[in-house]
Image 1 (tube, rainbow, N blue to C red):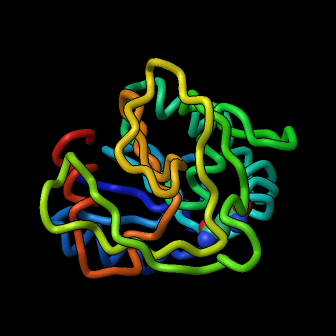
Image 2 (cartoon, rainbow, N blue to C red):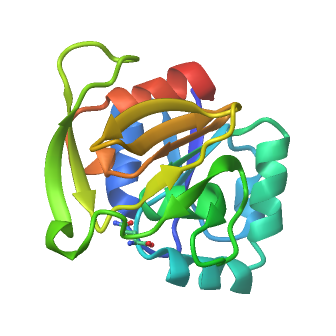
Length: 188
Ligand code: GLN
């Protein structure tokens, strides 16, 4: 069985644990760098990227997570997780630098703080994925290394690069397991 950690400092942790378990893998909460040993993959959940970064730095997790990725282990970031994984964050905040694109935080504007949208995801085929966005970011300026997996209003909202998968929305808040299955089958 594959063993997937969920960074459990802040944000939507339990929902990811349920999604991992219902996709047939084992889930563990990660709070310290020691918890990364033995994992096959890691999820960085949604929440508040500024707060999450502060806590990650406090627990000295930034470098160990970069090292985890450079060992070839897979990482799936949703929403704030996408922000933290991107190479740059608009405004210059520090990031993990693992997906070669720039994140625009809260990129859908105030009146669109939270919304649902149907995404056509070529990698999944039919039906469309019903995506839930909450103060969602999006990506711009992906390098040639990045594969774009979903776009809405011309904005990149799902992408992957080597062993890193990111979505600007929250698959863990739906019953549709296709993103977690994709992560487990194709990337971990
Ligand atoms: N707006 C948040 C941020 O930039 C992300 C929101 C979320 O994860 N739902 O960190």
